[in-house]
Amino acid sequence: DRQEWALLQAVLAAELQAAKALTSQGKAASYIPELAKSPPDALGISIMRADGAVLAEGDVHLSFTMQSISKVFTLMLALMDNGERAVFEKVGKEPTGDDFNSMLKLELVEPGIPFNPLINAGAIVISSLIAGRTPAEKAERILDFFRSLAGNEELDVNESVYRSEAATAHRNRSLAYFLKDNNVLTDDVEEVLDVYFQHCAVQVTTRDLARMALVLAYDGTDPITGLEHIPRRFVQIAKTFMITCGMYNASGEFAIEVGLPAKSGVAGGIMTLVPGRYGIGVIGPALNAKGNSVAGVHLLERLAQRHDWSMF
Ligand code: GLN
Image (cartoon, rainbow, N blue to C red; front, side, top):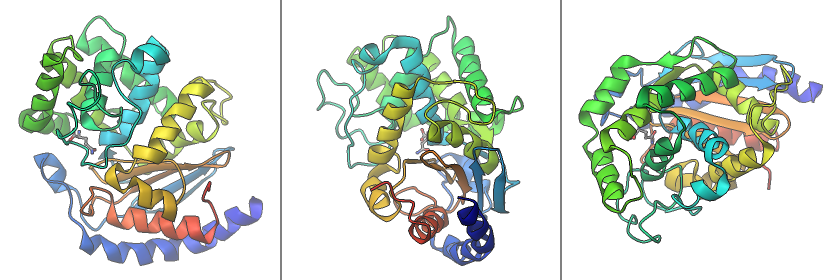
C-alpha cells in the first residue's frame, strides 16, 4: 500500500492534466440556474487513506454542492431512523435505466413507489422519512450527520443554490405531487421538498467527500477517529445502490470501467471509494450526456485501471 501511495502521488498530476482536456466535451448543468455559474474547465481530486493522509491535485479548493451525492447519506440516515423494513416499503431496490428525474416508471412498482432511493423520486421519499418534528429539524439533523461524517463542523447549505433549485424545481414538484397522490408521500409536499433541496445544496470540497467516502470504505467506522457512525449493514446497502444506481443510467458502464461504488451529482461531484483503503472525492462541473462529470469519470477510469482497483 505504501508503494501504491507513492506511485499514485507520482502519476496523479499527469493523469489529472490529461483528463482535464476532456472538460471541453461537457457542459455544466443549467436547469438549476445557479449551477451554470460553475467553472466548466475545473477538475480536482482528493484521495484520503485511513491515517488521514490526503493526495490532492487540481481544483481542490473549489466548493460545490453535493446534489445527488447527498442521497447516499440521507438513505443511511433514514435507515438508522426507521429500519430497513419501513424504508423499503416506500422505495424499491432496482435500477431504472432512465434519467435521474424520470417520471416514466413511477407507476410500475407496487403501489406506485419509486424504483430506488437514488433517483429523485426515491430520494424525495427518503427525505420524508428523516426523523424530526419540523422540516427545519429534519434538515438540521441531516446537516449534523454530514458534518460528523466529514469531520467538518463548517459544512453548510449554499443558500443561493438552494433557492435557485427551489424556485425552478417544477419537475421534482410534479414527481412529489404524484407520490403524494399515491399516498407514498403523506407529509406536506412543499415541506418534504424543502428538506430535499437543502440536503442537495450542502456545499463541500473534494476533501470533504473523500473523508465521507472513507467512512464508507471502512464500513461505517471512521478509521481516523475510530467512531462508529453507521451500522455496517446500512453501509452495505448504500454501497450496493452506489454500484447499481450511483452513476444514473451510466452505472453499468462505470461498474465495468471503474468497478467501485460511486455517486455523482449534477454540480459535477463524484464520491467513490476503494473498499478498506481509500475515500475519494472528485469535482469537474462539465457533465456528459448522462449527467456525470465527463473529466471526472475519465480520471477515475484511468486511475482504477492503472491501479487495478475494480472490485470485480
Ligand atoms: N437537486 C438535484 C435535482 O433534484 C439533484 C439531481 C442530481 O444531482 N442528479 O435535480
